Image 1 (tube, rainbow, N blue to C red):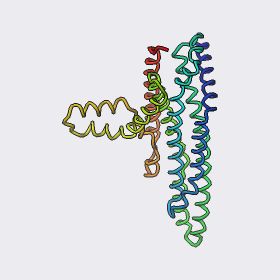
Image 2 (image 1 turned 90 degrees about the horizontal axis):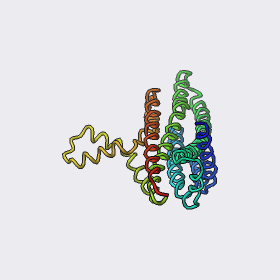
Image 3 (image 1 turned 120 degrees about the vertical axis):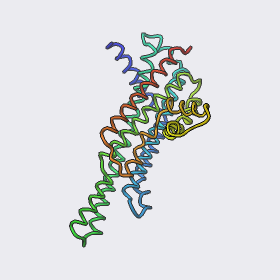
Image 4 (image 1 turned 90 degrees about the vertical axis):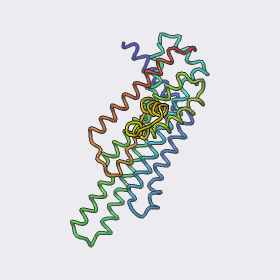
Length: 289
């Protein structure tokens, strides 16, 4: 067991280093960081709720680029190893296909985690600076107001920039990226090229963000066509509900992110990830190399 874990973590470490050297990784992360950093300036075009505008842009940038990074990086894993014939030398050693796939996936997860931490730290720092600016501006504008009015205004600023809710939204974005990485690896396990994998994942990403609509329609609407109901059922059970991990809208609608909701999202992410990984390993175990 310990030998298998050693092999898995060795493959994960090598995958992390190889993927971190790709130009697409630097381009996406730098562009995401630039957009997150620019959110503080973009927010100034709005004359009200500047702090929420900053958070919305920054969280949206983190969410989108983590998802894009997960798809583009993972789609290149198997085709790249096959093209360089690395996979044959690795599997010729006492390394099973299960260990190889799991190691590759853990390497991607490590890369996504590092990227998420970097973008999240910058996001939190920018929001904190905007919060301090908003506090100073509020105090200056309400210098002649009563203490009660000033306290109410400051409370609104603190609630708009609540870090615990932001942390939950950033963690949900990382969970979404991990799900997409597992799903991309699943598609790549039987795909013939990275172009096909990326194209398929673009469609899956779109459908996954609309999956909740299809589920509600399938459950609550009377669909006369059997084929239509079958299609909606396939969308509901096969595609991940990616919209569930987008907490930005709930954050700014004032919804309370309860611990039960966060636990359900964690459980859902674990089920999605484990299911797609098992399917990927099943396909890859039968694939002729």
